Figure 1 (spheres, rainbow, N blue to C red):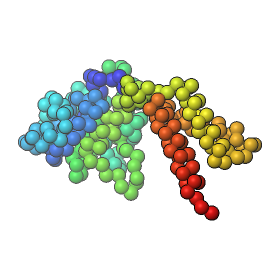
Figure 2 (cartoon, rainbow, N blue to C red; figure 1 turned 135 degrees about the horizontal axis):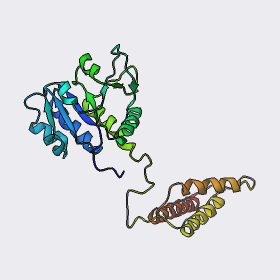
Figure 3 (tube, rainbow, N blue to C red; figure 1 turned 120 degrees about the vertical axis):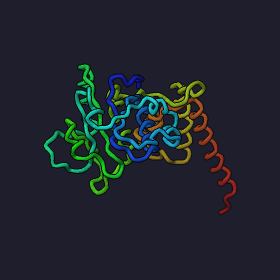
Length: 256
């Protein structure tokens, strides 16, 4: 992902959060997705506790930059559009988004320079109806209908993740390790294929001539999809060698 700034991302509004640790883990989820605009409505006096900072796991700058408000109305002032997270039917006529569709809508209004935010309710009860009424849209996570309970940080992470992914939805096809773990070249891969296929012929696995071409192609395609490194190809050579050696030793020791 190339996005490192949250200047045009959603404000995360935690309404009457109950535990300072949950504020910390929510801050951690925010920073995972380059979000830093944290707004707290009516938190408890000890919300910025050592427990909260520890739970943020390095995202304490999000906590230290949080803005505190007495009311939800004050927290959303200046925003052009607000989403309210809820899993319960509030019997209100409002548009309903999933996190993914909400993220797409957020990107569209961010492109127009508008400001927006997402509200999350207290851990035990969720947002009150008066809070939901302030929002333009409800966002609900499509989960197992028999169990839709999420903790605060999980919910923040889901929203933040979908927002972050819309910046660049295609992940690069690259390996986690660099340097020594170079992808193997075709000549080395073909050398391994020759080694493997000779031994498969020898043991009788490719004994049906009419099926052999298709079986060989399937085997080669299987390994080529793995984007093998030089070291991995050497390991595979070793595996084949040891299997053959074991088979020969077993054959020598076999007494009919």
